Image 1 (cartoon, chains in turn orange, red):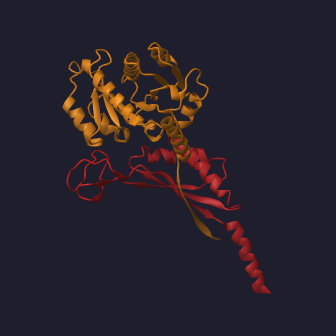
Image 2 (tube, rainbow over the protein chains, first blue to last red):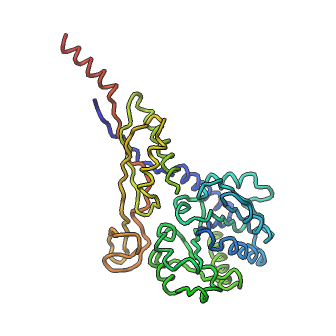
Image 3 (cartoon, rainbow over the protein chains, first blue to last red):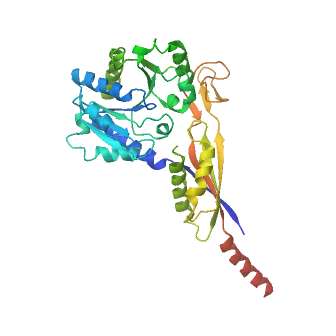
Length: 225
Length: 132
């Protein structure tokens, strides 16, 4: 009787990674900047995206959004009010979006051509763990955190914050009321992802949005050059 | 929470790879999982039995090697292992670094297969030769 070791050395999420790579190439050649927004449920991703879509449209940009949700299309309906094309992805219990879902929902999206867009936002399923393993072909991964969640969130979910390209703190308008320790939150984010850009925003008052939109436009220009 | 889908994709890959060795039995599947891979090893092990049940690799053992995060520090010109995932600083100089050299792995390292069937036959023919 012989035992044999067969070396496989294969990524477990290889299929997703390959698909994401192909999507990334497609996005680059279409000249669209793609962002993947990840946070806990209740951080205010939808409100933040609603505001971002509206503001970018006002500034003359062509935007669209894919929205992940376990079961409902409530978020898509809210976002569609901005006037931007929005498509819902129902995962039916799956706790994250994957590259295949993105590919499938881009295909056959009536009236939306990648080449006709400046920005495509992907709102992930509210979850701070699983979405960090799945590359969607995005250029920028954004981790969002609200002032009500506790300043130690980045320490509790290091994988997500460590893989993010930008961080957004939401609901800054109620920071004082909930005794949000801004310095501590910034320190914790920086401990997990040294040097990351952090935007302190309020979707309600519009605070910090100018800074955020400026960042997006800068990234968009970098795409072009 | 996504451990079952991860384990299912391991089962799929291993089943496909093992098909190249007809008659062999997969006895062990070895994974390499980085500290930043955001999977819970206990959950992988828990899901393993469920995912392999009724497949050609049922009964195979799952072995998970966890890998610590290794960062590269530009200033020191050194790669260092981190104690945990709560602070991404060079342990030598304290400078923050995002240059990860290890820690995100989520891969199947190898499988151990038992080619008993084939070799028993081989053994028998050897015996036959000896008798002759």
